[in-house]
Length: 305
Image (cartoon, rainbow, N blue to C red; front, side, top):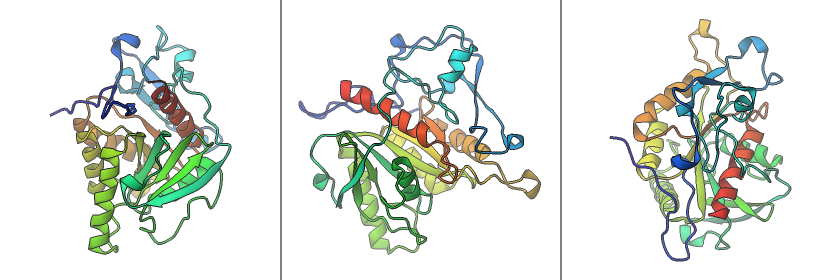
């Protein structure tokens, strides 16, 4: 059964701020020519990988994430339509994609309850993923600082809701990783409980960025987490990590884009429309600017509405 997307506005109280849902589109404001010809979105910039390893991703229009108040050109095969799709993603750039650069970043606080999180009303984006997926490394890459979020070779080190204020305007939130088998059972239950409570009750949460390791086949725990977010209509963007680790087919391995495509296919039944996704690598910084642009258009739309 297809899930209904969270609609705008999501009003929890008179003073609450509506969430922007990546699964909602305002059909009256979007012109999509049908039948839909494909749009090619390069997997990575040419500087990141050897050209011989690049496989452009062919995306039909119905699999693009088109932000509200965004119109595609009437000729979807034109160069202008191509350049509006963020590299290595299915995300179309809209009119709210501005003020994306990180000028300053600072750690604010750690919380173990949603009620203890910052109360200044600034919009925020939560990073979550399986332990050892590269969450802290991605956060450091986004702000161009090596040690803002502590990284560790031992998974499961993040145990709180950690808020980092960006440009004094919005927050990046580092959440505990899930699926770390060596963590005490009681700790795993506590992390799961307060993380899900945060997703359901945090009114300033614009979107969850779910990190998925694209260097390996889809794991059940990741599929379960994505389906839970969908069932609870939590706005979500999929961030495929470790896309620099390109397996050779002759050795039986699968390329990151193949694993990413399989993951999207497996979760498609839980969503009415395709969630936004971005291919990334903290080694080559692939996807860093694309994530920030995507965050900017979600954030600016959220602030306006």
